[in-house]
Length: 124
Image (tube, rainbow, N blue to C red; front, side):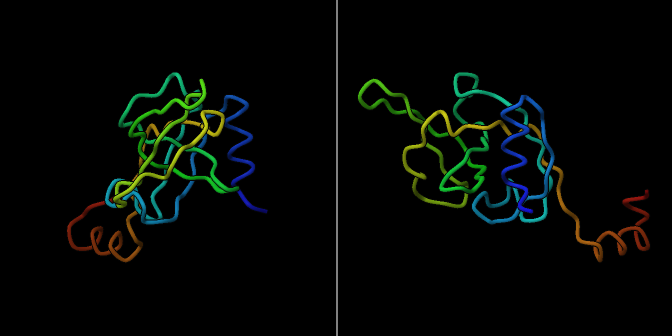
């Protein structure tokens, strides 16, 4: 079972979610393996600079809001990954699922074990 439909359904129902991400489009802000917390919001609650989870071509995307555009009386949003030069193009407000509220950095197991043994870090 793919998690994307479940995540989208939970956010549409007003429930916050946590999940592990894949991809490099957000550069150092969000890395593959990080866990993000996403709170459900609608487009009017967003601010430029927010990292927003939205649906695009059947996939979930978390990119930074860089602006809005109006076309024929319809407001759409512009997003860009921090690791990209250009925008994702126009995204309808209905595609917005939520705002990333927290990023938990993934620390590979080897680094975690070394840190615990050598430096006394990451004690659980």
